[in-house]
Length: 143
Picture (cartoon, rainbow, N blue to C red):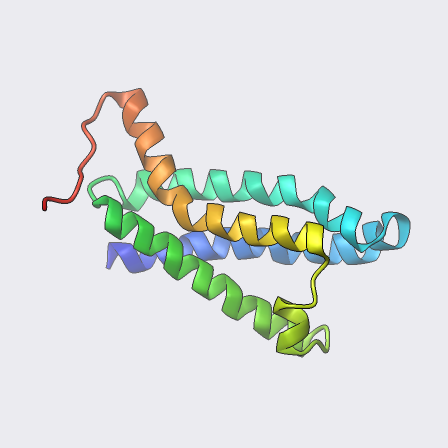
């Protein structure tokens, strides 16, 4: 149950940040600086949201979870984020699935997909970092 809570909380925080930043990007930044630059300006803010959310989730629900469960939380969160992107893109922006995933700017699209990878692995990294500060021993899966 804790893993489900971790996934839902991590998803809610990261997707919520994107949901708030999206209209700001589209309405304020895109007309002034263009799509690529607007997405690149938004990316560091999303990275900060990912890091903060992962650290909070790791401390709250993943303190005793092994690395594979932490990675599972990250991957499940990315799957939910992608599902949310499809839902928002098709319902609110009138985009096709192809436009959502493939018709991206080569530069800002690469940054977007890199952020998804970071989002997937960040629960593992955030937990290890907090354990190093507290002196706790990491729990690695046994062979």
